[in-house]
Image 1 (cartoon, rainbow, N blue to C red):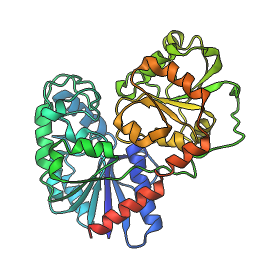
Image 2: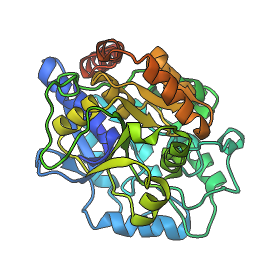
Image 3: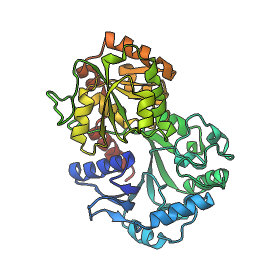
Length: 397
């Protein structure tokens, strides 16, 4: 059996990582299935990855989308014939994301009679425009009059969100053998409230490699002073402009912490500017690691942290939540359905950013053991995810 994975990019983002894990895991573990990858754009040196578009097309296609407001409807260069030739030899096509300035909606009829698995890794497919909807519920009524045209995939002026949702529904429901996979029970519940309720929906959790993300002993970093006498709180993805990530809420919530001298804050990701540091961090001891591409190094940072502060407002799974917990670090997060599903009893939950200080103080009086936290997270392993997809592919044979 031959399976083709289709995604916007290779080696860029969490969805791409999940796709790579499934592809590599299937090929390594099972001999009766051959799995390959086709992406819009390849950001690696791996020449075995099939690529649909030339790299410069991304900028052209993104410009067209922002100018017209019609994402995936029309791009100047069609890759339909190339795609048709590639997919003819595959038994199953596994879509991940088709947004990302590489795929046109009118390609989907090529897959009409193919067995199609579609992993819903964000909410693009059920909204008129965006990938996350936070507090917006217009997707339930057909979108239109979009509240945030700048949200990815952004547009400059024209709001075609209502038309876009109608187009998505028409083309996606035109697939005759479609199996929709949510990344969590939460996402499955959302999908059942949309037009995708007409399809076959189930869920498979994403998986993390527990041999990389683990509890480390005797961790040392060159030129970085970790104060092990202080409570170390970790922050990731420090882009304040991505509202759904909740980074600004996290920083504002720090004001509610009493005895700030007891804490050392650890930041991984985009470095904060001087204004933000002055406004939010002037009373704290903090360290900025910058971007960390080495997963082992990231795992060690998780491991030395006493708490991971993740106030994201929109998740479909929560990869960083599981990574932290596999390293023995509990997560303080918003009380969202997805967070309670993944972190369960080892999550610390807030309803408002001003509760951060109080919840932290209560937790550090009776902290969890790292081994307990890791044991809970072991249900979300890469091996379990690959096995679940293998069984799914075999059921479609």
